[in-house]
Image 1 (tube, rainbow, N blue to C red):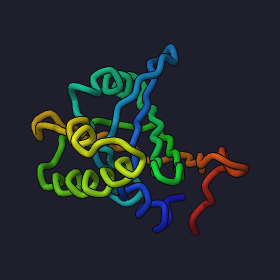
Image 2 (cartoon, rainbow, N blue to C red):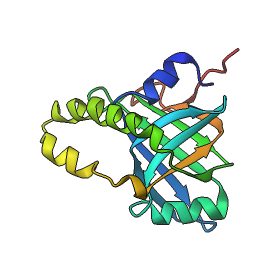
Image 3 (cartoon, helix red, strand yellow):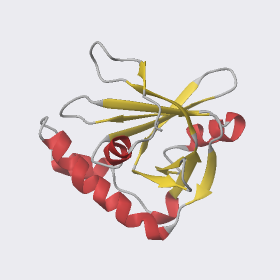
Length: 157
């Protein structure tokens, strides 16, 4: 399901939104600061621990996540879901991924009229506050608005 095109897309300047839910299905979400493949089939999403506290609590309880990756200027959206999410320590060696993500994301939202300073403020972080949520996608969907929205991603050979 994670072919080269999708992996490149989810690591580009997209909006990353991770959602998790409590056992009662009450949702919580957090903005992701970067994404990377982990150990073959898994995906890692960098989150700010303090902003994502409720989502992280829900991940600890259920292991379920859904992550939407949206390119603001086109609305192209890919959603990945998993049931084995775990919280891992943030590796400082991954900080360049965050800088790259911000560098590519800012022009996306500036093109829509959002001031760059606001985007930088929203994506400011302290490295010691970061964690990585790692999960294996069990399903994926094209969520780009239009006739194919909701269609499963094609399986990769």
